[in-house]
Length: 393
Image 1 (cartoon, helix red, strand yellow):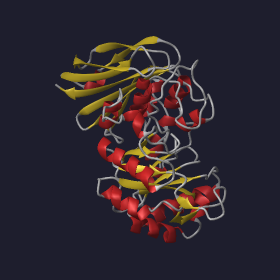
Image 2 (tube, one colour):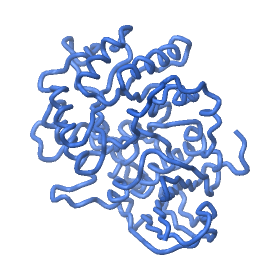
Image 3 (cartoon, one colour):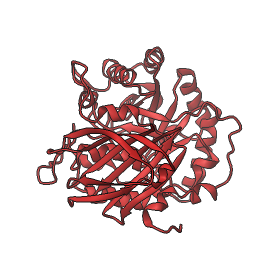
C-alpha cells in the first residue's frame, strides 16, 4: 500500500479490490450489524440464578440485544452437546441439556434479534451441508468458526468450501483462529469478519493488550480487512491497577478509547464484549458511553484517515449516509492532538463528542457546531480516546 501519510492507509481498498469478484449471485440476505456476546464476560448476567450455558441466560442476552437495538446475539462456546465431556469434540447438530437452540431462535426472532452460533471447524466436518441445513432450519443468521490456526493449502481450501456451503444455506460467517484477510470477503460477501488479531480476549489472561498495542493495530492489521477485535470493554482501569481475570475482565484503556474502536477498527459484525449490566443497569439507565454504542453502525459508505502519528495516535473518520463518525485513539502518553475537518467538504456541522474524563470509566459528552475545513484541538488522556458524531447543520 502507498499513501501520503500512514493513517491514510486505513482507507485503502487494495486487498479487497485485488481479490476475485463475488461468487454469491444474490446477497440481499447478508446484513452487517452489532451483536451482544456472552463469552468474554464469562456468560455472566445480573438477575439470572445459575447463569451459564442455559436458556435463561441466553434469553437475558437476547432481551438486552432487543432493548439496545442490536440485531444479533452470538452464542459462543458451550451450547453444543459434548457427551464425552467438555474437552471432547462437540456435536454441533445437538445441544447440551438446558439449551434449546430452535426455541431460542424463535424467542429471539419475536424480538427482532437473530442468533449466531460458535462452531469448531473439526466439528463441522466434511459434510458441511448436512450441518448447515440444521442451522438454516433453526433460523440461525451466522456461524463463528474457530480453531483453524493455520493458513496452508488445506486451510485456505477449507475456507472456500466453508463459505460456499454457508452461502447455500444463507449463513454469514466469522472465522476465528484465522490468518489476516486476503480479500476473501469480496469473493464471499457472507464472510463478515475474521480474527487474525490479538484482540480483547487477551485481557482475560495477559497484560498484552495495551493502548499502544491497540493503536499499532490501527496502522497494521486494521488496514488489510475486517478485524474481529470485539471491543466495548466497560470495566476500564489504568495499567497500574489492571489485574488479569478470566471472568468480567478489566481493560487498561479509557472508556472513550473502547468507543473509538467501533469507528477505527473495521468489522461488519461488531460484538460488544462486555456483559449487559456493563452497558445498562437494572433500572434501565445507560452507562457512560452506551448511548454512542447504540448509534454507531457496523458498516460504512466512506473512510478517511484523518490524522495521526505512526504507532502513537490515530484519528479515523467513517461516513454512514450523511452522518460522519470520528474515532481517535492514543497510546499511554497524555497528549493534545489537532484534528482537521477537511473531510467534511463544506458547510456547518452539528457535533456531539464523547471525551476522556477524570477516571478511566468516565466519558463526558460535549456538543456544538463546527465548520468544515477548520481544525480542533482534542485532549487525550493516557491510554485514551475520543469519538464524535457529525451531522449536517
